[in-house]
Length: 77
Ligand SMILES: [Zn+2]
Image 1: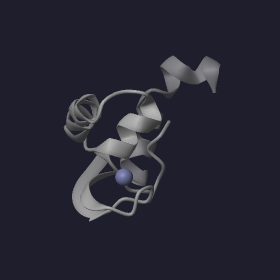
Image 2: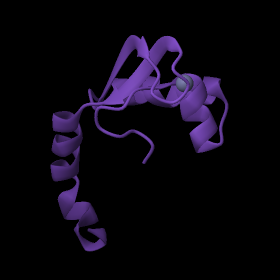
Image 3: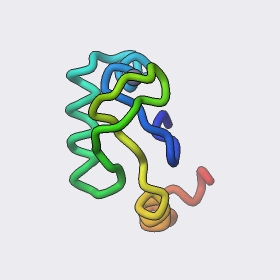
Image 4: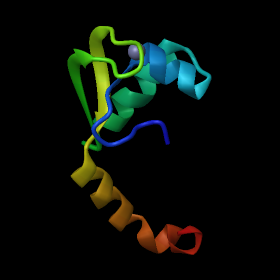
């Protein structure tokens, strides 16, 4: 998982890390944002230091998502 807690990455760096285009990365984070698991804001990218729209995973929301899927993923944990 590329989205670490308290780490901000711009779409370009997310795409590069995932091996996809920045546009594809933007589509993915846009859908993730609807679940409130991530935060989108203008900030400094932790990877390229560019001030841009970055994506950050929200620890509590991520935790909630993990709890919700624990039963289904329990065997993998
Ligand atoms: Zn970046």
